[in-house]
Image (cartoon, rainbow, N blue to C red):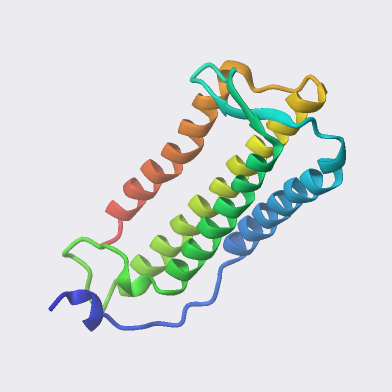
Length: 168
């Protein structure tokens, strides 16, 4: 039997930074969905559906495909929200013990919180970008799209790993 089920279940209140990340992430995500809803009737039937590594549209599809992004965003949000509530099932190094369990749980939960909200930022950005291009507003991330996505997800994970190594 795995140690996951033997770990203590602790109730650790959300930190101020977690609340801030959630508020900003949810606001931006909801705003992108509202932008999609309010512009739905003026969107052309064909909208950007995929971008290459240079941030250029390499496939157009039905405007209905834009609905996939909010659904995936909501799924990721709910899935990671559940994982945030259960840090005892996260993966930890063997040095996890009663003295440091709260530190590990909090650190892991905060990292998941950031990743969840960064995913919401990314999905919001892609929704905005697709609407912008479809309506000819002229906004584009260009060749910065992929580096922004990679840097935005990799840096918090690397910082999280380095920070976790400092927990005794």
